[in-house]
Image: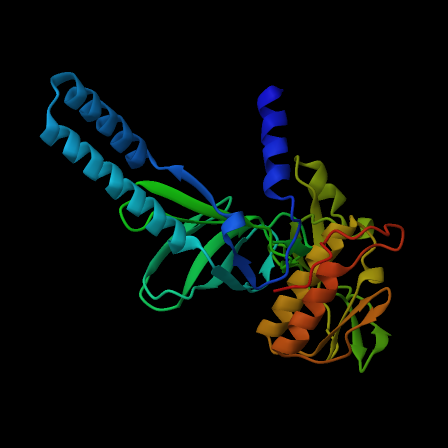
Length: 325
C-alpha cells in the first residue's frame, strides 16, 4: 500500500506540468541529476582512497584523491550541460490497429554539436550518439484502446561523456496516436446488401447451400446448422451461394448481433478486404457517410471514423482530447 502511494505521488510530481505542446525546451530547472552505478562505485573507491591517504599521511595519495574529485566535478558539469537546453521537437507515429505496438519517432535537437541522448518509455529504450545538432530515435508503446491514445510520458537521459552521472528530464507530450479497431480474423464474407453511390439495394441470399463453417458473432440465428451443431460442441452456420453488388455497402445497422466493438471489428476487416480487392465500398455509421470510393485516403477516412465512433447511448469518448501525431 505504501509503495503504491509513494509511486503515485512521485508520478504526480513528475507530471505536475501536465501535457505540453511541442516543441519543449528542457531548461536547468527541469533537469534531475544523480550518480550512476559507475558513479557510486567511483565514490566508494574515492572515499576509501581518501581514508587511506589520511591514515598513512601520504601526500601523493591525497593529491590523486583531490585530482579525481576535481575530475568528477568537471564530469558533472559536462554531463549536466549535455542535457541543458535540449529540445523535444516532434513526435510522429503511424496509425495502428488495436493490439499492435505503436512506433513513436522522436525528433530531438540541441545547440551543441556533440552529445548523446537516450529515450525511455514503458516498453523500449533507444540510444543515439549524435555529432550534429539534431537526432531521431524510436520508441514502442502499447495500443490500449481504439481512438486517439495519448502518448506516454517520455524520459530523456544522458550519461555522456564518462557515465559517472545520470542526467534526465521528463516530458508528457500533448500528442496522441490514432488506433484503429482490431480487424476480425478470419475476415467474414461481405454483407449481402450492396450500395451504389450511397443508395442501398438489398439482395437475398441464394437458396443453394455452399457449405458450412464455424459460427461467428453477428451471424443470424436462422443460418445456424442445427443438426450439425447438435452432433458436437461447436456451433456451425450454413453458407449460401450469393451474388454481390458492384459496389459494397458496410452499414453498421445491418449487423444485428454482437457488441459495438464486434461490429466495428467486422467492418474494419471488410474495409481492408475490399481495399485488397480494389473494390468500391461505402461505410455507413450513425452520423457518418464515407461515400462510395476506394484508395488509401478513403480507407484511412473510414478507419478513422470507425476508431472514433461512439454509440449514441455512450456520450463518453474512448480517445484522448489530443490531436493525432
